[in-house]
Image 1: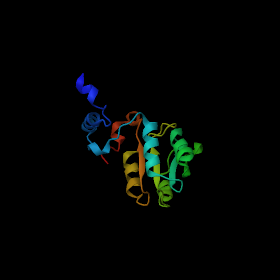
Image 2: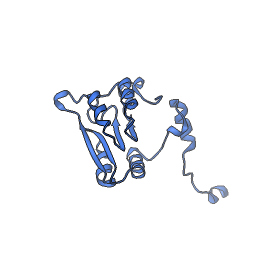
Image 3: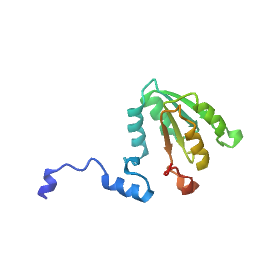
Image 4: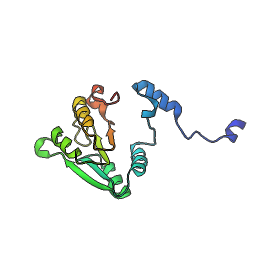
Length: 156
């Protein structure tokens, strides 16, 4: 008990990070742990962005992104509409053109929440390779197991 009384609780989760990295086949520095996705979104976006930052998000998307971007960080958010008339399918070529305008961040939830539709790994990789004018891309694969792990970008 004496040791416990003289030390602080761990502030990092190195053991957890190492275990996740090994299980997923990625480097330790690719893993960030937190108290849920909202906490991670809040921490990262407040660190990376400011009110003059330009951010592109798919619309519709998980609402927490828009809340943090528009109300907390107060940055300039542009919405790339997924149209109901097109079954909410993402037009890859149109997205590439939009990203060429240059953004500080592009938020991509794949599979999309709330539509549940996913974009193939090859299409996502093609967009990422051609989006050199975008400083950062945030890829949220929270529900990737529903699309199939083969669609994950972990190895990218």
